[in-house]
Amino acid sequence: QSVLTQPPSVSGAPGQRVTISCTGSSSSIGAGYNVHWYQQLPGRAPKLLIYDNSNRPAGVPDRFSGSKSGTSASLAITGLQAEDEADYYCQSYDSQQRGLSWVFGGGTKVTVV
Amino acid sequence: EVQLVESGGGLIQSGGSLRLSCAASGFIVSDNYMSWVRQAPGKGLEWVSVYYTGTNTYYADSVRGRFTISRDNPKNTLVLQMNSLRVEDTATYYCARVRKWPPQSSYMDVWGKGTTVTVSS
Image (tube, rainbow over all chains, first blue to last red; front, side, top):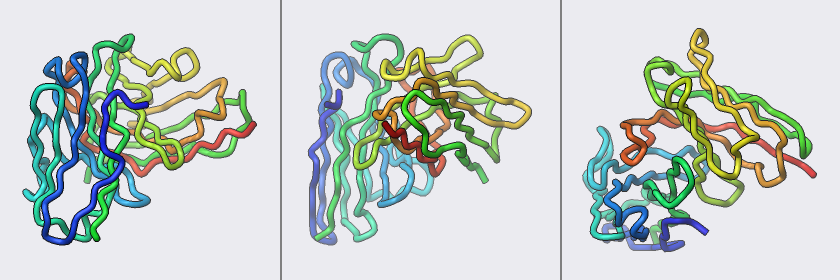
């Protein structure tokens, strides 16, 4: 059971907008810690998609955007494309765990229908 | 080009040991914070360990006391020594470069392709 909760799957048609939620608690996202997002294409390693809640690394299309509010964060994909089919993970920090603890969401599979 | 290449994975019996390596190119490991993240088959990502400085290394509860993270600076390599392996340690192990410190702000911006560890009973 992950400290950060994500929906197991979301789907959308090409061109549509989909959003993925990432819900934490007062000891993680709600404590003000930044949220980061990773994309994992099938059979590939994770790739940084969004850092510090809403920043895109160089080379990431602006179709991807992130936001954070309260104890939750969201990743939005606008103009959904077939190549966006992947697993998406949020990551943050949790102060309730012993020592240092980076936590991930359970992952959301995005399907382009 | 900035790149990470893991090696050392394989099939090992429960209770055994393995040593994973992560060779970096395009940047200097000793100038960066470095981490290991694993992914069990069909499961999500799990943070394992981070190397901050020689006296500051951190571990997930699930591996603390069994795994040791270190650096081989001449080889520009990150190492994960895994002892007393358990079936539940079966996973693909990724090394990643960590950006920003303190850890409350950290994220991983470069990832290797991973190396697979299978622990049999």
